[in-house]
Image (cartoon, rainbow, N blue to C red; front, side):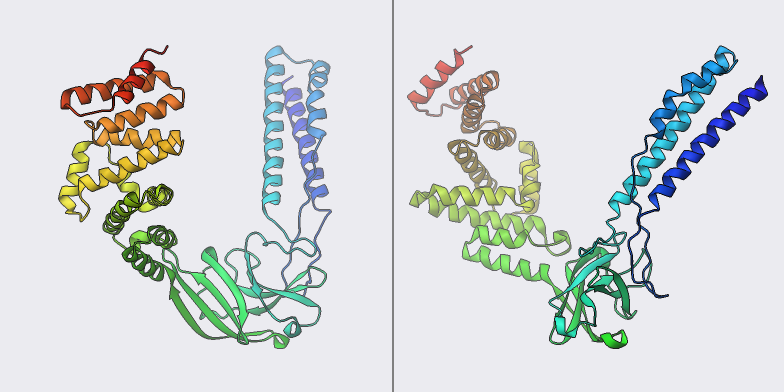
Length: 413
């Protein structure tokens, strides 16, 4: 009986193996035609097809078990073994399909990256300089780790290796920028890792002889330029323009003292807001505040959660912006968000104010109003109660109309 049981398991395994072979055979039927001289890129694409064999085979398990004279325990073991084998085969098929779908092999008239290693098109290359039966040039490699080449895209949509990129130029495909034709040269540009420096190799070429000759290279660090432009705009009081330049800086901590630079930006913002307040220009004020609090440099300030953390930060760094000025900017933003009916953002900013300035009655009033407009009645009433406690303790003056409105809202259920 044990021998028979083993024979049955072997039969099941061979059946599944056959199914897998048939699937692979079906997948290999469709191929993309590539120009194929000995040094030319070769490629077999797989066109996955859904297999219905597994479902029908699973249905037959009961029949197989019925025909076999095996014990209940052996039947259970055989059933579990077949189920595991089927699941493994299905997972392998799905994994294979997923890999093929993510590979992005080229299609007729629409070249895609070949296993992600065809990097970029040579932009603006004159058609009259292209070799016969070629409609475009691309920079890349056939597979990971291979030498990089200049490829020609034929009119039929096939890729053919042309010239090998000289090894004396270090091109970083994982930080690609672009490749283009200019001044009778081919430029291949890439960013350095962990820097914003763009290095461009300058190449002469003879496409008839499949030659690409490295002549020179040029480098440009855009982050340094963007920081310099941002600093100039800050001094002019153009806060939004300055932030737009800062936002284009790659790896900012490699290029600037983020906290010092951000605090200086806040100091200038405070001055600008004072002038706009005198003019009654709320629209510009709102735009400036939204920009500066969305700016990545402000994150370290928004991460402060207690008055002690706030005092320590400003005291130890001797910032040109005072603690009081920062809180004033934050209060103004919290009020304007409320006026703009951006209640969720108003809750976030005013709640932050209550954390770092727990004695600020204004912060609790604005927080209560924001919660109330979000129909979070209990949260709003808690904020209003805290507001009343603070003004009673500190003797702060408040508008009677505001107090009457608060009392009315505190009675709501």
